[in-house]
Length: 214
Image (cartoon, rainbow, N blue to C red; front, side, top):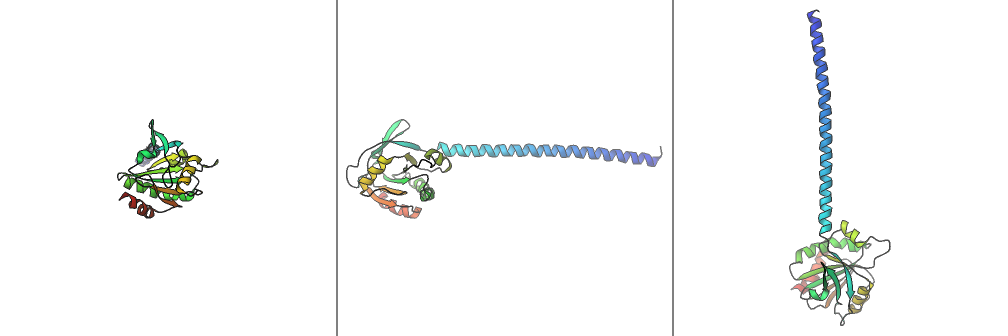
């Protein structure tokens, strides 16, 4: 075989080997990228699941067990709920300013003010201040409160209320609760100091609350 032919064959073999290695490397890189993508997706999924778990595990949702009639005009009616196996009532919170926010899962303005309420509670929870979100006026086709809170978590406690509670607060306040949100600010002595009908922003709520904290 001539030298020129040998050189041609050599370069042909080298080209073949080079192309084969290239193909294997591409497949290897593709496989690595696919594995990395799967790993990233799994990590993202795990992180999302952890975030949902963290949010739902911090939710404080209880049901109103019993409601008592008001002892007099502007005196907040006492009501009970069971928390961690222990029955607690509004009277147990005496000595604190208590904000009770009547709301509903289908109420747009209620949902809009929730982040501000969460922020307020986070700021004031160590200053003789309590907050209760009172879910009322549940509609047959509206989202259940526990499902709602999974996607709209709040920092404060939420109670699943009833019509008896609505009537008791209406009687104590001297005005029927016909719309939500309706918010009651109860002073440290257990009296309804302010009734706020409709949504408010953080600054407006704080202005009212601070009058009774100081």
